[in-house]
Image (cartoon, rainbow, N blue to C red):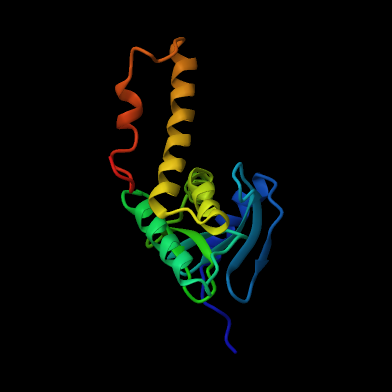
Length: 195
């Protein structure tokens, strides 16, 4: 069996990023895959990461340890709808749902054709999955364990995020935000939920 083709230079950038930030990781030289975990502030609590290095690209996966039940067609339908609604409007990356086993993951891509990515670009790729899971993991859990509809789950995620944003704005502006009632309504008009 031949060795998988990947760029050693790109691997070195990823290794440097992980080493400089004191990540505990495993690199498989046969496949060009990095494996590590990350604790996040959400109901899921931890993501399993795979960074897949190719000759001219990097694909980063943040994988949920909690899966949808692939034997429950109604749950899979609700989760697929939820993921489609969340993905609509995302600028960097997307959620994916495996209909065979219910795995939920977030994928981001770095085009490295003709250049090496900076460590900041690699960091953003890893961080993007974590932040997006932090925003939407509670909706996934609501669907898996609570039987929530996709619309209700996404509405709760967006309401919680709007509350966090308003709290930060109130603290930064030194007020209670009562004179800015339009802020909350406008926060998620471009998201997958209804405006």
